[in-house]
Image (tube, rainbow, N blue to C red):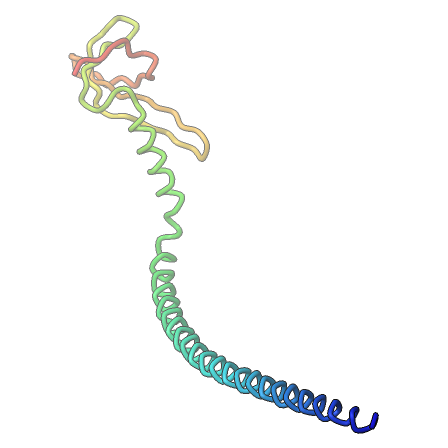
Length: 158
């Protein structure tokens, strides 16, 4: 009798084992299906994104070729003016020096040593690469043009 009593237990264990086996197979199949579905979605998205990137890259290449063509044209124009670069730099320095001057063209000034009244006729700015000097050319009441420095001017009238 002891054998008869023990026989239902293994059958019960077999049912539990079969149930767990089928459940684990179903879970495994579900995981595999979900994995392949996500893989297909990823590949579709990747393909779409790669097409977009290729389109963007082609647009950028086209824009780059247009810009390089424009740049070549501008470079040819600029090459014509390159010999004048030192002159333009010198003129820019003269303009900045003129804007910093306390006295301008046409101002009436009093000059040393004999407090003579004069009008600024022109400004002579001699500029080097790192320095410049300023001379005012003034016209006195008797028509004489005198070059003077800034330190020789006492006052100015508008």
